[in-house]
Length: 298
Image (cartoon, rainbow, N blue to C red; front, side, top):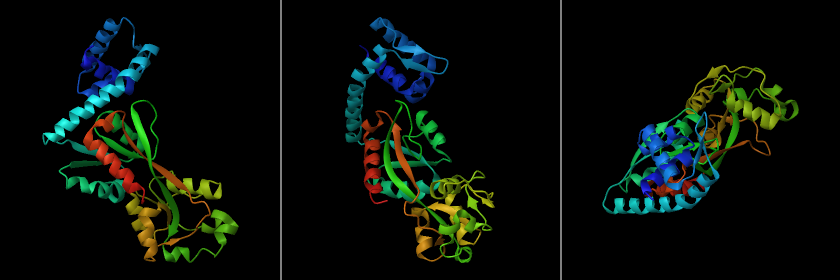
C-alpha cells in the first residue's frame, strides 16, 4: 500500500475535510480527493461519508486510521531526527493572545533560539482565530483558553490563570471596608469599568463567578489589549479584572489595589494545542515540553 496515500488518508481523517487536509499537506483539493478515491478502490470499501460540510469516517476508515496513524507518526519522527542530524531545522510558528505570548510563551521558548531554533509569533485576538490558523497550517502550536474538539487537534492543559478585581488606590479608597462582602457589586457603583470589549468578558465572568450576577453598568473604557487595560487602571481610569500574572507587579508596587480576595478565586485554564501527530516533529515536541515545564511555575 502506498505510504503517500495513507498519509493523505490520515490527514483527511484528522481534519474531517478534504479541503483542510489539502492545505495541511500542501496539495490541491482535487489531488487529495483523487488519492482517497484511489485508496478506496484498492481496499474495495469506502473510507469516508461525504457530507455537506466535510467528511466523516466509515467504520472501516476509523479502523484503518487507528492502525496506520501511529506508524506514520513514528516514520515522521524518524525523518525529523534525520533532518536535524543533517543540520536542517524548521521554523516554529506559535499563535496566541499578544499578552500571553509576550509575558509567558516567548520568554519560555527563548532558550530554543540559543540552540538554533527560529521562532515566529502571531498575536491573535481570540481562541477561534488561533485554532483556525492552526487547522489551516499557518501555525504549529496555539495557546488558547478554549479546549479544541475533534480529531484534528491534540490539546494539553497548560496552566490555570487567576483573575483579580483591581483599581487604582484613588478608587479603592472609595469602597467601604467590607462593603463588597455586605453589598456585593453595588459597593462599586460609580466606579468606571475598563475591559477589552463592550460585552465585558472579563468583568462579566468575574461577576458571575463571585457575585452570581451580571454587571449592570456599561464599560467606560474599552481597549483590546490587556496590557493597555492595566495601564488605564494604573492611571486611574477605573476598575478592571485582570490575570494575576499581568497585574501582580502593579499590586506589589501599590499602583493598583485588589478590591476583593474571594475564598475561591475565578480561574481560566490555558491549553496548548497542536495538530494531532504534530509532536512527532522534533522542533515542535521540544517546544511543547519546554512550555509544559515552564508552566509548572506560572
